[in-house]
Image (tube, rainbow, N blue to C red; front, side, top):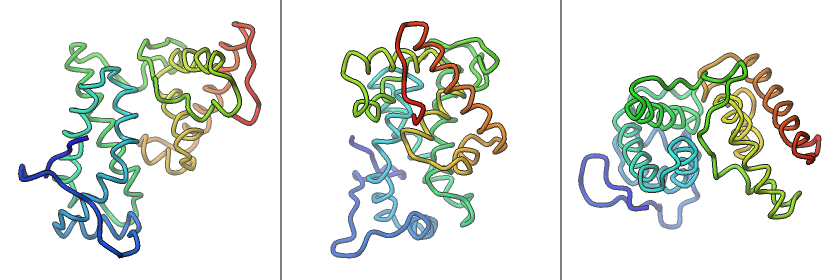
Length: 211
């Protein structure tokens, strides 16, 4: 992905030579000081994950690429608002997600909400990125079935399921990323798993309880 300097200069390239990779917190501290090299490392570290997130919302490859590049510019410009107590990934994740939601609102005339469908109404935004971790448990044919089932979950349930089981975030990190209460994350995750199992069982399939 050809991400560009947030101030419009040459493409950013990460890497600190022979130095040990800094933690996200140390990296963000340097980014706040305006170190573009540090921001380049941050881009390299998370651009693939943020692309998967954007593609899950937008379902268009080029649009997702553009959205992530634009979101990284927003992240850089908003660097002064980050606080050391916040997880840098979840802080940046929220910026990317909000940017994608803004794009969807423009596309749909201002009607999109991440909470849409939480009480049962489903959304036809297909996430083609959530399946890789399942391939150790199911074959390719089964994986396609699970992928389709995940895409039928309400938006918040789908996001929380992906963040927990595919991105490996803790429940607290998900709460920060979603800007919601920990209890909301727990209940949404529980409903997501229950709904996913129900969808699959309705198709004559099952998934392991450890998902």
